[in-house]
Length: 206
Image 1 (cartoon, helix red, strand yellow):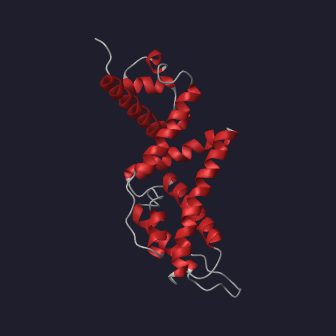
Image 2 (tube, one colour; image 1 turned 180 degrees about the vertical axis):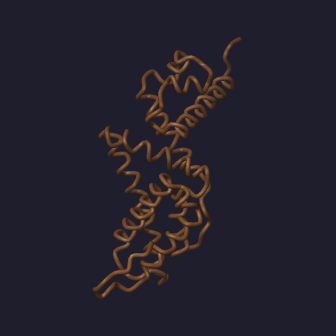
Image 3 (cartoon, helix red, strand yellow; image 1 turned 30 degrees about the horizontal axis):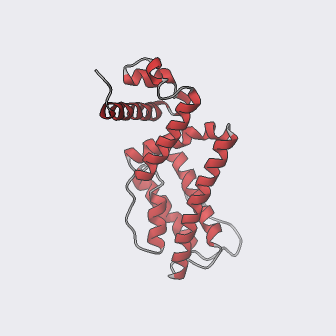
């Protein structure tokens, strides 16, 4: 039976889903031709038609992760601080889908750090994310919902906070359920409107 374009596209979708399932279950550390073939109930030889080498499989998986993350629904928000909050909530692992994506992103960091080209690409991605957040912060400042200050610095601090929260939530889900993550984010955003301390002892909230 001759191959048709429809059959080929259906097979590519099957391959994509198999790659994604391996990533969700094992991360990039467990992404191998053998693992993907097992998910497909196929031979590794079949996969060489799509991925001649392991680096091609990794590159495809990274592209798949980025496309899936970009297509994830985002929270609707107006302007100002609510938009900043919505953008940060969209990063957190608050749903099963967001948890899967974040687990895969974190598992990909090792591969990215070991590859200068990938490392530069990730640096650009995070810089672009900070730039978008910077613009949201600046809009909130114009509305008087955030105090004056360097919006780029505030955005960098917010991104650092939320990425740290992502890691904690992934390692200890019972301690960081979705409502707890949202509460901690709100606590953090509240500090941005707090006047600077004049010194002395600082109370650390747990």
